Image 1 (cartoon, rainbow, N blue to C red):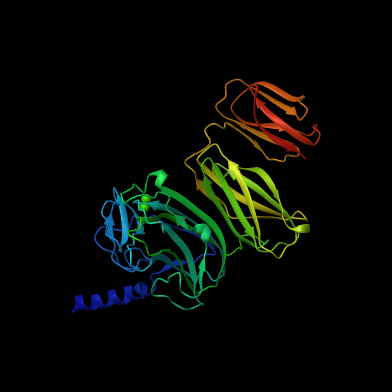
Image 2: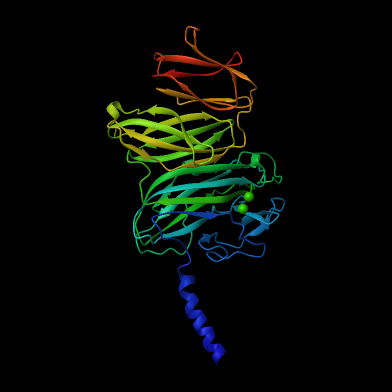
Length: 406
Ligand SMILES: [Ca+2]
Ligand SMILES: [Ca+2]
């Protein structure tokens, strides 16, 4: 009898947890991480195997060499899992996603989403994209199953789509190999009131033949009650393009905007300004969408970026920080010069030189600064005595870049 009573008490205790087992965001700013390593080889239950994770079926575990098409996949290598899918001809689209609930007592206005797309097999099917999307429900409305791309109220966000790069006849690939995984990241403006559920999800379209095995891993969400930027910033993303990182952002409206400072860090603590991108809006005012791009050639693989939007009256507002791990730094480049344009000071970072002779030359070839036996590291050059114009930086007689004095 006592045992029975205990069981009833236990069930009463756990039942509320089961019915509300989405991922709870109960602070105005916070972070959620999911590496999918809580998956196992023996089965999958929506919203149970991993709280808030929906995949609508029982996935097979695979290292990419077994092709259990039309199931959700737990791609594993040494118990390191990713969640993905492989679809065959004639079968419907497949989707999976994470279900959240805002209980912070405030409206969430910004989501910074980062994840890795991993390709675990090759395929000659060309529909090799995982489409990212999100759905916000009305306050108080619970959801019980994953929406699809076709669901009314779903928002697409193409900057977070992942397209598998390797095409060819079906063979397994190691999705953990850096050449088979890509980091996707963006900050998106949202409106998620308190007591509201939302899904962040991916959908793989139906295939012609058998699709590649395509997966998501190392997901990170940072949410905030603050809007990404006051100048109607619709998105800020960083993507890898060989030895360059491409920063892209869009404004949906601008008022009294002067432009954007681009700040960079290698450790998320010490930031340096790389440059300034002036507004594209006439007089800093626009009601049309405007697109901005800044390209950064970098020296180390881990890079943190943020935008600082500057009003015409000097007021500054910071964007979220985005980190990107690009495994292909430009190894031929060993000097960084910033900010550009510069006003009072220019910083010159030097790596892998010995007893360097540092020279700054103006546009007609006159030496305006020189120093010998310069060590590797960061150097501060006072520009206050220089005239406005273009200058070249030479190390040991080789031109390593240029900057403009404002
Ligand atoms: Ca993982
Ligand atoms: Ca992985």
